[in-house]
Amino acid sequence: MTTNREKILGLKQTAENGQTQGKKTRKLCIICSKGSLDMAYPPLILANAARMTGIEVDLFFTFWGMDIVTESKVDHLHIATVGNPNMHPKFHIPTMIGGLPGMSSMASAMMRKEIGDLGFPPVREFIEMLHDAGARLWACKMSADMMDVVEPDLLEQVDGVIGAIEFVEMSEDAQVIFV
Amino acid sequence: MTTQNLELDLLETVELDDEGYLIEAHDWKPRLAEAIAGVLGIDLTDKHWTVIRYARDVHAQTGEAPTLRQIVQNTDVTMKEMYQLFPGGPAKYAAMIAGLKKPTGCI
Image (cartoon, rainbow over all chains, first blue to last red; front, side, top):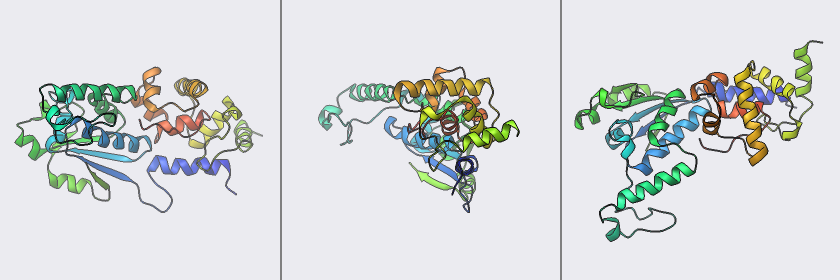
């Protein structure tokens, strides 16, 4: 029979080293390629959940995902109201209406409020939280070059700008999630 | 018998689920928190107790363990400190030591 001490220690092993007996240390690499408000959250939530359970995390921001860690963009991420058939669980915005001026801003503001009501932080605060939690954040060199973004344009929590080769090497033995 | 042994004995008198969380929150007492923390290799400081007391207060009101973000927002403990206080799994360990079930929140 398992003693209480063993039950607690079983969790400790899982949590502290990302290990279960006989398994390797667990590590997660998450590629964030989308910068819309709705697609910014899933990788950040997964990364945070991983850190909360002791799993090592590297986040790689590429293409539009760069907006998530760009100082001038992070507070203005938008949701698309056109070409987004499942946009809202409560009501649907027809494409013709979604294209009207201000619709995206309005929908984005509503979504921000809903996310806030659920207790989730705004994206900027989420990035700070992940950094404090020990996740590493990397920006993509090619995307930075393409968007004329240099390191001072990025949030201070970003650990560096790296190329694809470095990321591939970094993610050796990790589970990779592409968002 | 040493104090440590007494605490370990206390630990074996309560019922934990398979992951090590206390099944009945009212079985909890401060000495049990010390026993659980001891097994985890954590020495409880005032900061730990701030977190534990807050977690138990939230549970008494809502029936759920607080999320890590709630703990950080409503106590003077920072996110960085939470990871130092409960190495490897702050939300889970805080709940476990406070005698609560595994937190279900995503944040």
